[in-house]
Structures are given as structure tokens and as C-alpha cells.
Amino acid sequence: MRVLVAGATGAMGKELLPRLVEAGHEVFAMVRSDAGKARAAQLGAVPVIADALDRAQVEAAVREAAPEVIVNQLTAIGHIDTRHFARSFAATDRLRIEGTDNLLAAARTHGVRRFVAQSNGAFTYGRTGGPVKSEEDPLDPAPVAPMAAMIAAVGHLEKAVLGAGWIEGIVLRYGAFYGPGTSMAPGSAQLEMIRKRKFPVVGDGGGVWSFVHVADAAEATVAAVERGRRGVYNIVDDDPAPVAEWLPELAAMLGAKKPMRVPRFVGRLAAGQAGVVLMTELRGASNAKAKRELGWRPAHPTWREGLRPTA
Image (tube, rainbow, N blue to C red; front, side, top):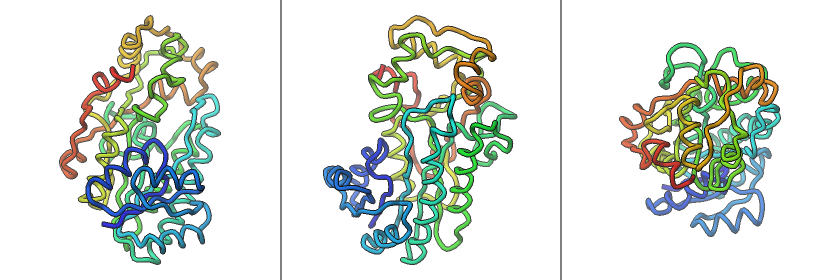
């Protein structure tokens, strides 16, 4: 199939483009610059230049690529400062709203039949009920203020993709990435904070995280391109775990002392309201549907094994 990937040169794109090429697809990469054009070509894709926030440029790129499938991996997430959570996600929020709308409009004009979009299943589920959520569970209906814009942008993307009756819309709710190019790559600032005991357990550490190796997420995306059906899929590993469990274990892998524990009010001063939510109230996700319907199995079924080489 002819596949156009938007957001093609980030951590996910670097894993996804070669896999799509290896699977026999004719792959096009939507990039913004000559540097991105060179990177996309190195990864085996045909580059097309467009700014995702410019509707005319996006329409021209889709017209040039003439894809059967568009994969939306548009993000601009760098270092996440939980004290300024909304600011950290502002550029990505805009891409998830305007970029998605522009891609969908161009897809409709040019008869694209399938649209696969990156969503977030790591930080977005409602914070009530059981510790592990399925795709049927809602996004957080009452997020704390610093997280509201991010969750609203995710909600906009999902509603736009799933509500477009003229195309087969597929939403992939990825877990927290680790692996090459991510915030939990070898030598990353986040791992160094854990190594230096600057990443404490806040409160009871009861927030449940679902991780996924970026390579496994790329494999799941290829499966969605080839055989996904309209709807939502959680793309996470088999082992959702509370912060009080995974953080000390990761510290041990790094050869560090156990992380400090601080009460919620201290955590709020240091990491902000969003940081406390991530540490104490987060809900994990189940990958049962993705396994069942996509035939996908993560090569790193648990972060306990997958993070060890990274650490």
C-alpha cells in the first residue's frame, strides 16, 4: 500500500518508517525541512515537505503522495516539566487539533481510505474505578487544570478520527514510551534524575503506569495500517505497574539507591499538581484488544525486561 506518515522523523518515525518499508509498503514521509527530508530518505521513505499547520501545504503533500493510508504521528514533545505541564504539551496540543484536522480534510479530498492516529493512553484515562482501563473506558472527564488542555486535544483528535464516517479511522493509545530517542533512552535526563535520587515517590506512589517500548509501538502501528478496524486500541505492554513498584525497581537497575519518598504536599511544591496526579492517581491500560484484533504481541512484554538494557 501507499502510506503517508506525518511526523515521520521523531522517535516513533525512526522505528516506523523502516518497518513499513520492510513490510513492502510504498512509504512517504511528510517533513518540514531539508534536514527532515534527508532523514526520511535515509529511513527508506520518499519525503514530501509540508508544515502540518498549513492546510494548503498538507493538501499538496497528500495530493503528491496519493496514499491509501495516512498515519498521523504529529507531536512536538520534548522534556516534560510537570510543574508547567500545559506549556510542555502546548505545541503538541495544537498539532493534535489543527494538524489532525488538516490531514483529515486532505484525506477526504483525495480519497484516502484509512487513517491511523497517535493518541495517548498513558496519562489520559479517568482517575476513578479500577487500576487498569480498556478502550471502552472514557478519558478523564474532570482533569486537573494543568492537564486539561492536553486531554482536550487528545479528545478532539479521537472524536475527529473516529467520527469521520467516510474513512476508516483508527486511534492508537500508546503507553509511556521508552527506548531509543525517547525520554527514557540510555543517558536521558529522566534516567539521570532517577540515578541521582531526584525522582522521588510521591505519596503512596499508587499511580499506575503502562509502558511500551517504542519499537513494539511501531510494530503495532504497522499491524494497524495493515489490518486494523475502525476504533481505539491501547498499545501498551502486559505489565501495568504502580509508581511505588516500577520506580524503585528501575532505580535498582541503574545501580542507584532507593528513591526518596515525599508526602503529596511536598510533591506538589516540587512537581506541580500534574506531577502529583502522575504519581498517585494515574490509571493503567489493557492491551487485550490489540492482541486479539491486531495479532500483535510486544517483543518486550514487560518494562522489567525491556528497561534493563536501557538502564
